[in-house]
Length: 260
Image (cartoon, rainbow, N blue to C red):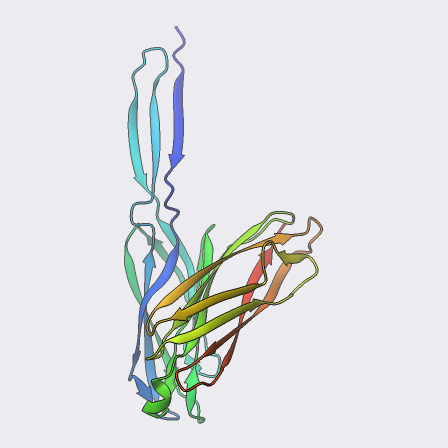
């Protein structure tokens, strides 16, 4: 008698993604030329990501199940200085991070000679998953009055790669790391390539982002079937008003990898 065994694998809806859940800059204010550290906590955001398997002989009506946690393999974590000198190399092949788990990563930095706010970016690449770019504000000898204003930046989460002709889902996390609200925030998505375009709108408006808070913006890009392989940088402009009435402009970029 032939017994047919079914293997039904059902992934849970909580897709595992690594993000920067918190950060600490030591010391909080660096003097020009000083050494310091940036410590980030990398977290698998899917607290219960699992794969469920139902298996058993079909003819008997008997079923058993097995649930397996989905871990994320962190291929690389690095720091792009953006004006800050990064001392040391990237972290390679960090390993698996289970659902809800967190791991600290510390980077050694040196402050530049010019005072101001800098936004080095933490880059996290996962195996077969999504890539995350997260800016960390670093204060180099900036007076407190300026530090209390809103300071906007954007973390970017993108697919590992996109097939030509397929849509690409991207999340921009608008982060206010200042000490007052950012008002009338306008986000503009620029044109990085004739082969990639925004599906819905290129302009987003958020009335206010309080101090220490963030606001996600989900964007879908359409890719041409003949889009060439490679990395395309799509410019992003963020404008907002601070409590003193000024209107700063911050620039960011969404890097999409096309691989067919």
